[in-house]
Image (cartoon, rainbow, N blue to C red; front, side, top):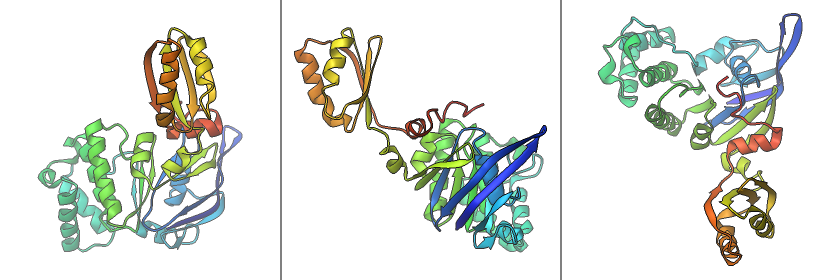
Length: 315
């Protein structure tokens, strides 16, 4: 559904050249739900804008939804849906009119636009809101309207740019269910997000971009398996003795002592923890707390780049 090779974008700003995207290769198969992660300034939004024809690449090529990005941008636009970060609807028009008008823009007949709007309103729980003005909707309701408008013409490929940004947890969870339903129906989805739990929960595969280059690619579990193991952390009033015992655990790595806290990584924290607790008990080491944490996508990024995906997620 997406095949990009050497896609790049260079900007001139204040007399300086900025290589925002430096020759990325992207492959997305039909039916996939692919997440695109990266901190602010990494090239995420620039890449998305190129793939959706909103920005002309400086170099490279791409086939998007079967059409050449450079020679047939109109063909790309006909076959994709795009839900941007900002709301796509107006403020004063009725919700149902806004959706039906979007369908007419894509060439649907009045009857087909009306039928398709009713179908999507039912699925996305907007039916009871049809006669409200778009400006009167809550944030979560507006995002559902945006998605309705993005898929009204039954696109083969849907781009979602930060779809749940700014939503409360309940609205986010509700939106995730709707995205999953679209995916089950066969829609290919390319999703950018700052929420690592969102990428982990929704995506079949993840691409991570940093400084304009793809630095990691794989399934969420596959990427996390590249980190050195589970993080074991415990607090004790005998940290030096506890650290010596922890260092003898098979496969223990990255052992650190910080005040009363001892932490290290081990391939399987859940299986190693019982033996460790017994050894600490036999040495009369009292524990105040114990935690075992599976690797996260942020750990993957930290391991590969030395910095956190979360550092400027909301900058």
